Length: 123
Image (cartoon, rainbow, N blue to C red; front, side, top):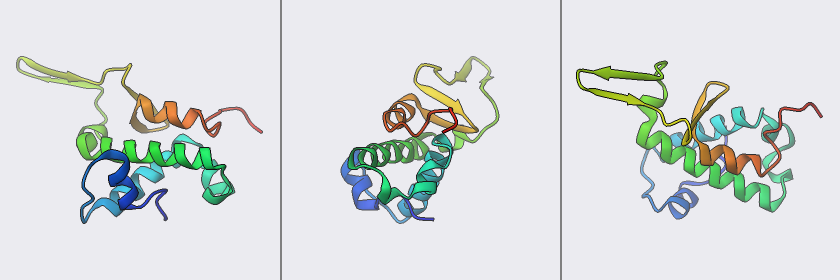
């Protein structure tokens, strides 16, 4: 699988340093972007997208990769919330969305919606 951006582009977009595991992280984030866009990018090919769509997909992928870096272990849990003693944790529904088995920041979905690739209508 090819990620939608390079580790260098990821670093430029997020201000984070690219490490040895960045390529695998970008592959995972790209796969999740594919799920959120109903595989439409893979179906037509990334190069067939307009420049604006490509930029938005890259930005969404970078943000999803950063989210996975920060919260990946928690995002993969089947629990919506949990508590231990006096401490509890729950996702903020306004900031984090769960769609088609993918947990992502709301801004990722907002970026992808601008591409018109997330529409649930059949075409």
